[in-house]
Picture 1 (cartoon, rainbow, N blue to C red):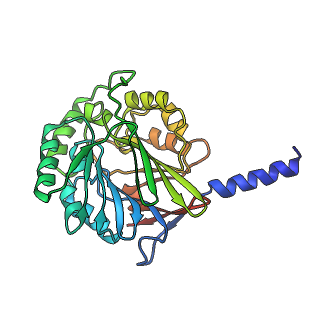
Picture 2: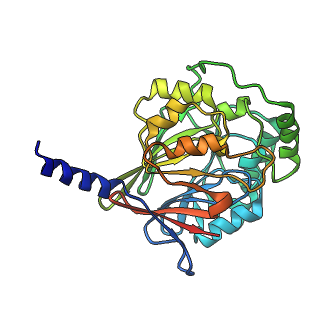
Picture 3: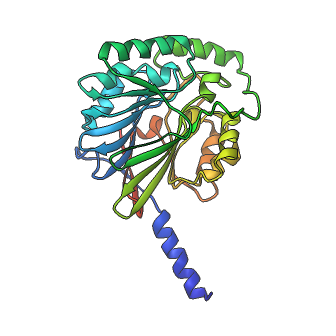
Length: 315
């Protein structure tokens, strides 16, 4: 292979993998051809996948109904064919009433781990009151809504995490109690619910090819290692970094994704020290992948197409 051919290939590769970051200064929101939105909901997760006009699949809701509602309102979402709750911690489910407000929600799907009981009871009551059927995500499940399809990678009842969860320091145990009492809460490290988060390997069809996303809930190293062992090909264009960028990560798992952009959903000034600087560096990788954070960047929207992928930020 000649030097000229090598140079041309490098230019073509760079054109494919480049990602442009634009900070929105206009009212034209969301950008056209948007794919994924990471809502600015404080210390928690709330994501939306565009599934059609005024329609989105929503993954988690954050801790604050008003913020969840605001995010979907500015995105113009009126229909939610599926609301996925990766696990029942407050910072992922307490915003459910905001998603339900003034919208048609067809189904709620949850993890198979019914813990913590309070979160389970709240979600059950909200669904029952609204007359929304519920289901449980099953590993291997494949679903599609419009241009969006995905496979459920986790939790797998037949796979055992390779190591026990990290023990939580006392300060994090205090933080977990705060998580149930305050929208600022983010959950503790080393918990069963975190490691039972629903993980989705998503493909979005665009005009010039598929965009792949890995949405990871709050999984920690034991589950990360088990997923990587079962699914060695985790490569994705977009990674939602697990557990708000906690320091407890499996480096091999994050390296296997090789994303074009990493997103950390996290609240400013949270009591858990999220995100860890080490995790931010790891998410950026040796290639200097952009790492976008809701605490600094506000709402994050990935849009465009496979060959022209962009990120827009709005506070």
